[in-house]
Image (tube, rainbow, N blue to C red; front, side, top):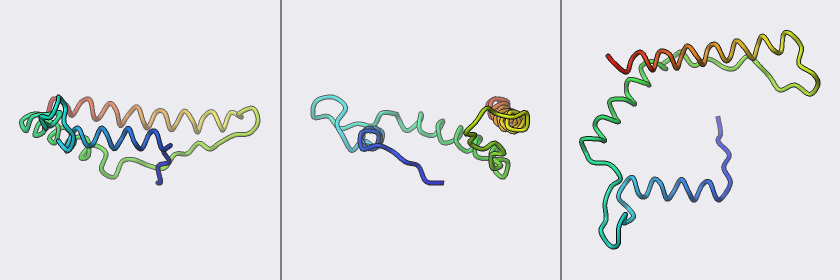
Length: 98
């Protein structure tokens, strides 16, 4: 899935990545990362947990764009998408403690 960004959004993303990676100074001329190595390890562990919860479970959306008033089928498809998203988020939250 391609992500579309405005030039402003892309520049903000570049700046954020630069700060996080230590490519840009945070204060004055002192280079630094936005997180410590210990915090980075914690973040990597959290990302791994999220990836394991999401692995193979993220299905395509069933709802589609509508041009008129939504029908019951449109609403039910959207609700099914929301329920699937809710289940994934609940899985991520419950894996936080494990």
